Amino acid sequence: MKSELEIFKEYIRGQGLRQTPERENILQEITTFTGHFDVDELYLRLRRQGIKISKASIYRTLPLLLDCGLIREVDFTDGHWHYESIYGQPHHCHLRCLKCGAIVEFEDPLLICVEQKLAWRFGYLVKTHTLEVQGVCPQCQERLETGDDGGD
Amino acid sequence: MKSELEIFKEYIRGQGLRQTPERENILQEITTFTGHFDVDELYLRLRRQGIKISKASIYRTLPLLLDCGLIREVDFTDGHWHYESIYGQPHHCHLRCLKCGAIVEFEDPLLICVEQKLAWRFGYLVKTHTLEVQGVCPQCQERLETGDDGGD
DNA sequence: TAATTTATTGAGATTCAGATACAAATTTTA
DNA sequence: TAAAATTTGTATCTGAATCTCAATAAATTA
Image (cartoon, rainbow over the protein chains, first blue to last red):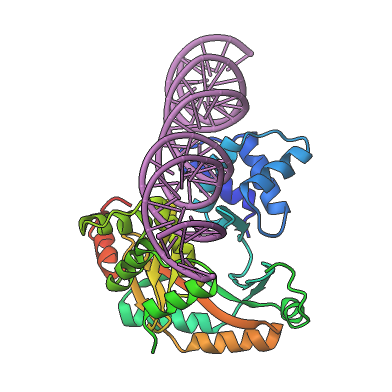
């Protein structure tokens, strides 16, 4: 299986773009780190390693990584986008706690059935899906019951 | 079943807020119109009827309508939020064409199964879910095959 | 290897959706 | 009807994301 770097290089080349240390550093950081991130977090994490890249470059690089399928947009919360790297990882969905924001990742084969039914029923060529299930996590349920609200 | 207006009035009262013609006009327009909308569309639709309400008031009213469950955020595209009214309507998901943006609404009972399994497995109190399936609609598939790309 | 071409970078300006401050107007309660 | 408190519109502000532009660096060619 190709590495993220190989995928990215091929993409860059195929688009007539250029390989730069900035782009490689960003990719490196994204693939090393597991979990969700946003532009600011990525920027700070790079800086903490002594790697100085302007936010403009990060904003310019993310669409490339999205386009070649190495990352995906997770959600738009707090007024900005959050991302996660997805290459080589099985597709998954999110279960989010409405109170504390905790995220559980899961996958369910039923979604494939849903996709297939849609393809058949509406003639769509189905590519992927994004499912977020919202609820209250066990901890927050307990907090709500004991009256210790925690501030919503 | 209570009307949207009743729901809203109860909510307003319960929160110690005030009933104003601006808020009622916004609610009225949202419940009359079917389909997705954004702040600008809502603003223009109101103005076309001679109802002048500042965008600030719309921005201030939408969170109230979200909070009392009369509308929901549909997606964040084009750099801003889109909404739809949901009160009294069965929950549904979206199938979106990646090429032309067309939206098909559907529902699938399998999602209930998914929710139940999550509740059991992770102990969450599941409230709702948001599923968007992405693909290419039949028309765009045809356009792509005949080479008439249509611009992405 | 050096010269040429063209893309990319960083800094700062710009844009735009959405939030906010404040004075005037309106709703609510009494 | 008057007092108290909220809401409105206008203008301003905020912040994420984009754009401009000169300087720099990558790829290509000789």
